[in-house]
Length: 529
Image (tube, rainbow, N blue to C red):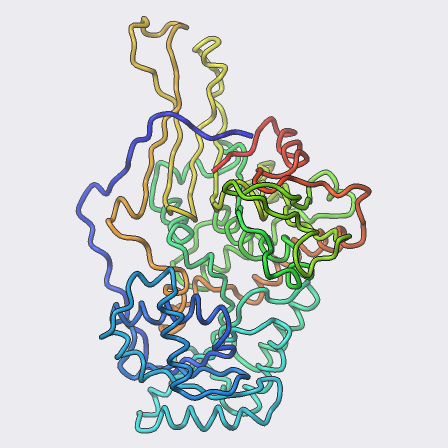
């Protein structure tokens, strides 16, 4: 595997002073969190709400109603959320004055969301919270921070109870919006059934299918980089681009999520949503305008253009593997089949690498290599666009070792962009002779260094977008369907074809040898972030 460019790093900074744009403040609303005492609520949602309050982006009438099965009072919920904020990596320091502003906006009601009886109690608390507000300010945001298995019963009860009525247009007030976490279905059939159910109860403009990757700064910057820079836009096609690598690597194992992972595996967990989202943003055509539907229209076109995987093509274009015992940060870690709640004979993949082709005019013949895995050498997510080599190399033997230019968009960590290119090494060699020494350098742009601040966490961006009704960063029903059509054949093939020998890789490595062989067929190698 390629360790990436190792030459000089040139920092890129804004050419003029740039101040952060003023963000639109959210509409007044009550956010109802189903599963309010769970991990997602504690680690992501409450810290995001806290930050939005710190930036004065929520309305004075904003409130949160937590709903969960546990007995408890408003004070119990407030104490649990204060503890969660104190432990959060996304809250640098808990500001007591700000907490005193947030605390009285937090409410709690016990409820078993799979039964109809407890929705009356939820409605009663909502009525108390909304008492005295003008009707047009009684907006409601329902966030399903619950397992996918209960999505169906909850949305049915939300609708039948009258808590979340269907609205005709996005402009109608008060609005009602329902946020659903991924995974949205576990295969094409179940995703279609869930889409049909959601759209029978709510309009598309009320339904927000959240993928936190789309809230990251670099993911949003892909469109700006592509369509606002004339040096890249004309090169973004099969004539100049050799191949594209999209990587999402994790250093952690399944840890306490063995039951979930045995049902999901890496393809459901990462490919159907995160990686295909990154692919569609990289490959899409320019939208007619920067509106939610215009952007999503182009993403759907890309997903529908991906060449279908078949039983005949899968063995040559896809690799699966499991991690075995190894070391991370000097500490021994177990293999996947040794993890809690994992079958010792499991063939669930923890790593996958897939070669896809987008069969349209722009991308014909350009392979897109997608890979993701747990217990890899480094935590990183990135899009690496590998350009073609110059048509004729004039620098003799030294030129033969030149690497093609690579444009890398880093999603995490250290969000930013880098461009790798070749330069002459300073020295006494006579110009324009084969004695010229050539070396790669990286031109680096980092959001934190360039703008002097870290970007907003993904959930902060996405929650604010829901509250103001901006749906661009959320997946539409036909987009979910098109993504499942890409990965469903792969999942079904792997589940029905048990390998004679499951490929493996040591924890702390960059994956199995079979993944290297997949990309080497293209005379390329994986870039190490």
